Every structure is written in structure tokens, then in C-alpha cells.
Image (tube, rainbow, N blue to C red; front, side, top):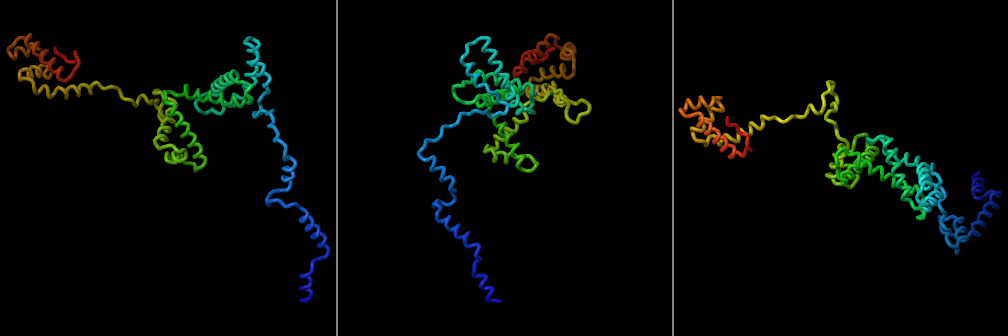
Amino acid sequence: MPMTSQTEEKHTPIDTIPEQRSTRRRNEQAPSRPPGKPGRRTKQRRVSAGKPPPAPRPRTRHSHHDAPDTAGDFRRLVAMPDGPERDELRRSVVCAWLPMSERLALRFRNRGEAAEDLQQVAALGLVKAVDRYDPDRGCAFESFAVPTIVGEVKRHFRDHMWGLHVPRRVQELRNRVRAARQELTRSVDDRGPTPEEIAEHTGMSLEEVLLGSQALESFTTLSLDAELPGADDGYSLADTLGSSESGFDLVLDREAVKPKLRKLPEREREILYMRFFCDMTQSRIADRLGISQMHVSRIISRTCRRLADQVGARPGEYATS
């Protein structure tokens, strides 16, 4: 039994010998090539060796599925003179490309502007693209029209959607911060990114991130008559604002005139005290001091005018009666 087992292990079955020989023969006849490169590619290189590279195919299909074939219309539009016929052809070309402009306008929805208004702005950009397009430059119309339409919509947001004028640099910071927030919110957990994370993601400084974040909240103005959240009795933002208090000016005037009153002569200080603090008439003051009422009036006017000049009051702000 042991001898039989060793003999079976040493000898190979007879029916596998022809297959091994044919495999060895094919390997010997195959040409040598670098490892990792198939023989089919080598054969293609041999066939194309010595021939010039093929010319690039002209672009015959638009990148948009609803793109109409208006290449001939554009060539006719460029060659035609101004007139009703050219206007009609121009109108038909614009109408043919309106679905593309409407689709581009919908990219900017949910940003505080109605979809109909965005489509009108995009249609205006389409008209500008049709007027500026030159078919002799060799590029497809949609390659020229898409940046023109998108730029027109962005310009509309920049120039007409802000409640207050904001510098363009701040608007660009706002757009970068908004895009970074969207990316980080999708990549990190559900929590919002911190300003430090936004600064690291965008390469902006922390001050620029904070400035862009403030601009995010300043796109539209808040009406003073708008009802505050959670207010059931119509309490608005205007109700939280204070009004000018005239008593504050009176306090300032009194504090400014106090040191000047202490420096007045005793007689003038006594007359002012009886007139403005005791509410006595000029006649009673004159009877008490034994002088005429006209004299009292002159003292009051002269003293009040001098005090007003010392504290920097405007003419007419002091009372002399």
C-alpha cells in the first residue's frame, strides 16, 4: 500500500499531457511584452503607427436634453439686417431656448424671491445671450448662454434683493459661508458647524467668517410692525423700542448750571430762587426786596442770559419771565 501511494503521487495522468504541451507551445510562440500591458493594445499601436492622429469630431449633440438645434438660425440671424424678419427670427430662437433658462432659474428658488420673478430675470439673461452670441467662434450656444443667464440671476440677487446696501466683498463672504455651512452640515453630524470649523474648511479668517455670518442674517429687513414670535396680543418689535425722553435734557441742563449758580452774587441768586423755585411773581419779589418790578425783570434777564452763555445753551432756551 505505501508503494502504490507513492507511485500515484509521482506519475501524472496521461490525458493531461497533451494539454500541457500545447500550453507550453503557445507561451513559447507568444511575443515578449512588458508585464501588465495586453497584446490587443500593442496590435492597435502597430496599426496606427506612422499615421497622423485623427481630427476631433465636431460636436453634433447638445449637452442639454431639451436643447433645440438652432445653429442655422444663429447664422442667419448674424447675416440678416435689422428689420421685422430678423426680429421674428430672434423671437423664435429665444422661445426655443426658454425651457433651459427656466430650469436654470429654478436653481435659485427658496432664496426669498418668487419663481416667476427668477424666470423673468433668467429670460432677460437669455435675450442678452442671444444678442451677444457669435456662432463663428465655434462654441455651442448653451456653453455661452448658461454662464450669461446664471450671472444675470446672481446680479439680480446682488443688486435688488438686499434690503440695505452691502459691499460686494461682504456678499461674497456671505456666499462662501453659506456654501460651507451646507457642506459641513451634510458631512458632519446634524449639528451646525462652528465658525472655527468654517474658517478651517474655507481657508478664511475667523473675522471674515463672522462678518459673512452676520450678512446671512441681514439679507432682508424686518418690519417694525411684524408681530414677535410667541406674542399672542399683537406685540410687535416697535413696542420694544423706546422714545425720546425730554426729562433727560432737563437733567443735563440742571447739572450743567448748578456750579454756575453757586458762583452768582447773593442778590441775583436770591432773586432767581424766589422766581423759579418759589414761583413768586416779579411784583412780589420787588415788594420783598424794596425795588421796582422793572429792576427785578432786568436782573432776571441779565442773569439768565449770562448763565446760558456760560453753559453753551442756544438762544431762546432760557426763560426770563
